[in-house]
Length: 108
Image 1 (tube, rainbow, N blue to C red):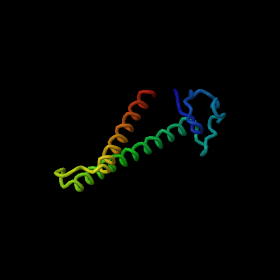
Image 2 (cartoon, helix red, strand yellow):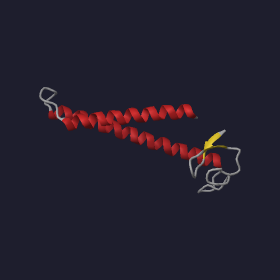
Image 3 (tube, one colour):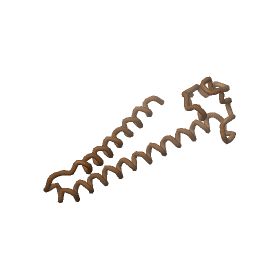
Image 4 (tube, rainbow, N blue to C red):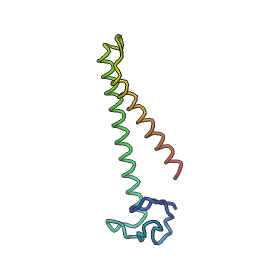
């Protein structure tokens, strides 16, 4: 089984006695967990961080849409630049995170 080293993050086989990248031995992780449990914990932490970024990107998109709507009187008048930038940035951030999550799922 291929796992991520809990110390350096390098992908290694779970059959190694020590990580070839950083030298961390099996069972020498921060809390005394074995290599598989530490790798699983690291993967869960990465997933939570990505989900938090995804929620922030959605929030940025919604704020940008609301700002765009309110600044242009329901899209009836001239559109302002900054609300458009905020909306597009939120959308692109969300799309980027989703693409990264899909690619990382296929690499496992």
